[in-house]
Length: 518
Image (tube, rainbow, N blue to C red):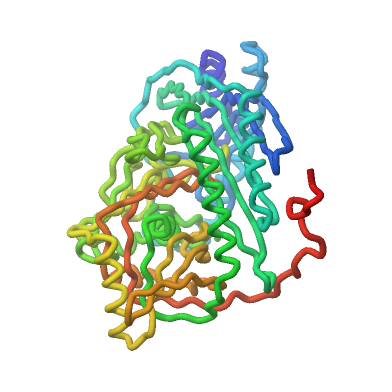
């Protein structure tokens, strides 16, 4: 902390190039990571690594809050490594080099931006940055109690379970555990040190149907500490259940076309809301001079985007929902702003968006949701998104809603989706487990081989019903986020046959199916 703060103070006073602009804001983000990475397959340990790293990101802003070198064509900031030893001079040296590089880049970008604005007419351009209150919090460094050898044995035991399921073609068990200590210092006076620990286990299984279609499923377990993970017997039982369901899925008939009502069970619903709403509820300015298009709902603030019974808020504060640890929980964002509770949708009407410190036309102040991958540009992201509906229905009532809607449309069946793959922003992932629900008698039949057509935002206004029980879904690829949502019935969605061809089945049987295998 002393090395970062001292080098920051010196830069504010001395970092200037000829008669060019001085920095008006500088922030340093440093991280110390102690990490364990392990994986195993079919009883064999594939890797077991322990690493210790220190990294730093610097962000220099020249100009003023109203207009600076950011939000223009390219990202900003520099990142690099810090010495692992607590050597004051060595730490300052590493910071000095990065600050020098970023300042030079900042003044060049700022000059280009000013020239661009002279030649362009830009209407209602928001400020580039918003002030924030300084934070002074110093927590103890992060430390995790992790027995590396014991978990090597545990992963081998978990992965060995797949030998009892010879029809599974490939399977893997991976683990990531560690402790992170993060420092943030900036010229507004923030001196922040926070710590976090976590352990993440992912179990995946894959196989092919007789027609070559690849099928896969996974189970994920999260905890801040090892003792928050399920017992080994529970994870082993989950492997058995996952494999049994995948083998059953491989035998299921293909459904190549469907347009009609869809019931998403809570697991699938939470994943769907993450894909359809996650990015759209974030206030992100569109960079000048090109860049990604603003796909937020900012223009819809004050309008209805969901049924009138729906409420949505984001609150990264609580660390768990019921018994599920939330991956999206945090206390301070990467811009040193405390995470806050934000009411986003009330009675179906969009009230505001979550925001970082980059203002937009309608959202001017940060809500403590500025985060980014690694030390990339922080941008508004959801943390823990809570979706609920008044007068939620039971599981049986939701099924009857699906059946009745299918009947009203003259369909022989409706579709119930129990799980979907992770989707891209704005689009649903492909169904993993989907069932035809007969409109005459409610009988269900497992089907496979479908993908969702693009879902327009207005489709969410036509959700017919929602459940009263909710489930948490954790997205851990990229920026961690969590969504807590009930089951929902969409009035109409379209699914089609996936394009492309499938690989043929393996020529040889797997060793696990051979009788002569020891």
